[in-house]
Length: 555
Image 1 (tube, rainbow, N blue to C red):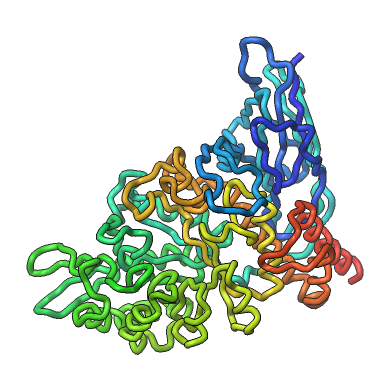
Image 2: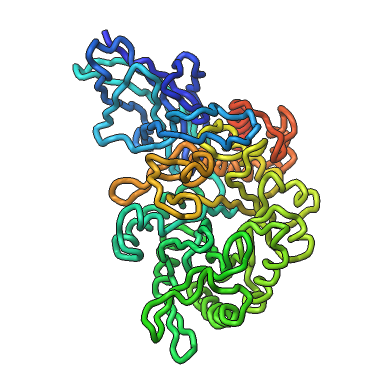
């Protein structure tokens, strides 16, 4: 008789099709705080499937007093051609060969239909704990029901709710949001009503995963664009030239800001004022002129010539006035040029000098590795790559931000699909230890190839066209109907943010030293040094939860 072998496993596990379920450690209980999204998985595989049948046809039944809090997603395998950069020497990867990797999460169908096969699969289980839930331990039973209403397999999980509310997220998190990629993928006109609806759905998913700062394309982003090439025009500010004077319209920007605020966004970052990796040119800017609608600035524009700085000196005061009117100026940062290196110190400085007087009182921030930019006061608010951040920490740089991208593949945390989820989630402990104020990652939904030369179907190509490891260019998949599907590598980072909030609550109750004693019980943690054991992140969080629970009982 056919049956389903199933067991609860931790969210830090990844189930590859060719693995054995018996090699996956049972994870049958966990604790969670009020307001938390708590995740784990159900690993399952079919056994004794009849000859001629590829799968079993089952319905998942959930029996629990908290069943209404539970959502289920299927874990789908996606093609990964480039698990890591060929030059990477780090050994902390699950696999380094091309293949199918578990990552994409899709909401289970309305009748909770699942199809066990003879290979290993998993379901992603989320428990959304209400802010006002009653504390206690709640059983959850999962049953795989066959077509004859027979139970083919079952397993159980024990959820302990601690009656302590998670504090609000304090760390600022941005993953650059690429509005143009969504218009191209769905084949809709930029800033059409269809596009606005799609944008709202994707921003909603971003916010629910801790992204509280939104990258705002005032002009088409001067990011990841081959020299001389162009990304699709995605410009929130309307520009008009009348008798040699520039005039600006902010209707789309106002709609963007209000939409974001309504969805829970708290902070904004204005797209870069100069081109990437050199700050030598202007971004693409379109305007209505006496010649019609045309490009007025771009690769052919000298960043420090006469025309573009003069344009910015007219624009920026008007833009800041609009941001003040919308009530977000104090929560908005500006960018000059992304990732300046030592070789562009002079050009970056020159570009910044053309606008710094217009941006007095505003935060100017850029992703950075080279300490000399900060040391010389050229970049006062750096977001520092995690493999170069030690020097900034040693020098007590205040309000320090961190970032990672494709280059942070040796030793440090990252979210590549081929990495263990533990390596992704550990960053919450690192954020807490070093009081990191903000975090940046460049690709929430970048669906172009390197240099934005071509469109890249994310369901077929997860590496930007043999460019970067899978997991770097995007964290969500575009869903049918204009929504966004989450991924394991996104939710690993989301869990780190929940950990950080729990650490902050424990810090309020017991002090930072007490929390760090728990975190570093198994050894010191830095951005490059940490345990590679799943039990480290899971065990630390459970011990912190117990400290909080014990404190509640003592009151």
